[in-house]
Image (cartoon, rainbow over all chains, first blue to last red; front, side, top):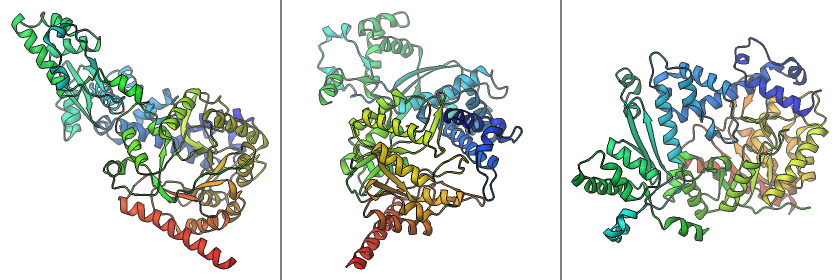
Length: 274
Length: 282
């Protein structure tokens, strides 16, 4: 008889080792001795039920979290890669929501797959969409609130991004692959191109758009908490002086429309409500 | 000590397939059961759906990762998150499973079987008391489907479950389908299991479908409740009286009307059983 802790350690090690699935090593003999063989199933087959469920469930979680990566790889290749990832990165969080945390890095560290060099970028993009999907809620800033601010106060105005906003830098236009009707076909034609994506959520829907250099610079300042005046200063390096205020103002309007700026009143209201 | 939870009627699991119906308030059912871990997030659609469900009827929280039987220390961050969710949702009750699912800091995300020994009994009772202290409430624990038993178990599962509930002073979520699946897989008497339950501690019943793999039954929650499980449900109602009952349907989830019809069937079976029992004693 094994102490409970030893039994559990051997059990999890047994079912979470991919080699066991191929039947090469069989299951831990000390564990097998403890498992009753009854009816049509022997002790190894009974452990095998748990091993099969372990891999099927967790690979399925990754398949759901990385649907385009999975579609491009195909079922067999995705299962092989996902299993290798899970073996090296066992879940350490009680929620399956976080099983895929290191998947993009894992793909990147393996070195680019010869035929799919964009895969790690695509995985990072899909993970970013998930992060935005269930990021904290916020009350978006409304145009009326902006209009109420006198022009003299604008230079010191500091906008706050909503939590459901991410900026992602990629070496490939992975958003195009993601949006393709046939990602596998699109994957054969995609070419490398430095791409910066803004990913955000409006209500329950996640959106993404490629951003140009001007918006990249402004977004960096926004995320750093810089006042509007500093945003304009940074844009002076990219735009002729007469265009700076116009472009900066247009960006703010676009961000308000996309609901990526949080209302300054939101935290205190939420705080009181709780 | 006593155990008591309200009778909520016949409910269904809160699953993404039917989120739109919850949001537009066309998902009418006695009550919902939400998987706790699915809502341990910061915001977005799932939490909005849960909030909407709360406004239309009672909600209970059902966890899958408490890992009560694990020999790891209780996961403090998980308990904090659960407590925060409980405070936010104010569920009618909270439940998890009689199993373990993690060791050495690694999670299997499965409901793994325990040996039914005195050592395991002491261990799980101690942890259950700690969890109930942390949450400030009694919880319910559910029997799981299993595919293996340990030769050194000293008692049958039903005795173990009853002992845990008495010693930890918690409730029981009796999963009738799990009783049936395990009975077939291990060759024990499912009726004896049901009739051995301490009726005053059974606060909820689960019903679900399963798959026949030829060599064993697999608890897949992907179809209708089978006739043998309906028979066991009748027996459970005879034993325990009216108990809040939930249809679990997690894979190949049917349209709302089919899911509700299964919950309605449970209501009918319960009513018929209670009527028969009343007639027999009248």
